[in-house]
Image (tube, rainbow over all chains, first blue to last red; front, side):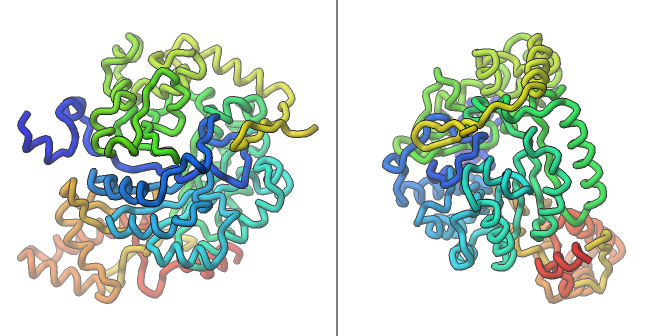
Length: 384
Length: 111
């Protein structure tokens, strides 16, 4: 392969040979600080403290590198990304280098003035998370008094300043019967989109799995509600729906395949193929403080480890869906089987699938244990 | 927007404020971006979308394209309408004077 081709595609010949092109999007976790303490937080159990957060100039460089690498979108996330005072500057930089920006926020630290400033800086889209539709339960799940009321207010302001809104609804056994109310809430708030996502069991959510796992019957009922709403609201509200892996037949093609589409940068600058990858403890992650995003995409050992089909166990390697599902989720195989190179047990072809399904059913049948709340330092157990 | 909207040649269309038609230089590729959405328009689609300025009617745009491409007007009209109807259904386009503002939206939902 000639040098000219390498430059044209922007990725190494080894990646080209696997059919991997340029990454699509960057997930930028600007800070792990957050006023909420959601027990299903997607951040790793070991959080980056403020002193470890990258400086503005480092993020500006990373965002430039993302654009140069040909990425289209940046998801500005956290923790709570609005704790960063330089958010407007980062957004303006994204707009300047041509990256589409999506702010993923709890909303509780925002007001009309700041939203207006973000809009002026060139922000493209806002996603606000909700814990429930019922106020006291929502505040209990988020571990933040007054949070729900504030979120409603902020979601309305998003539209008022002229920004498009997605509502993110994280669903589980303790709010699943409100799925219809969530859709009504999204309509009332003038949202264009709602993401109805069942809890994914990694990190904090894995610690709290028994408190969140719905029964199969609960899940089926919610799925019916979502499907009928989708039909009814075509052209009015877009509904994205994510079902929990444990009750699935086919595994999700996690992140569109390991190291195929996305890059994730933690507050400290560590660069991962997905937000949960830290749970695979034998991987060595590279940092954007030492390498460019382009170098990491092509050469980081953590990105290369589960790319393509060579790493796969025989069950996946011989499967006709190997390049559709990509073996499912590596972090899930790690969490449930202790081996990240195994077939994701969410796949019905996995010999462990039945056990996972039964595990979910038995946890869902018992009374939910108290929450273990997410804290920057350690955790706290919900009082009785 | 309680029912599906259909476009006609008198419509004045533009991309929604949160949708961007953009050239990605490193990829040498045009893309249409929306929240968590990415479309890859072909050359014809780009030529059509670049004409949507929120002022001209589709009728004018079709005339202009037929002129530039020296193609039968019927063929161009069919291509243009098929493309734009698809994008309108996806929520990527707004009709001038018919843009769904948050206030309107709320009214429609509660009424």
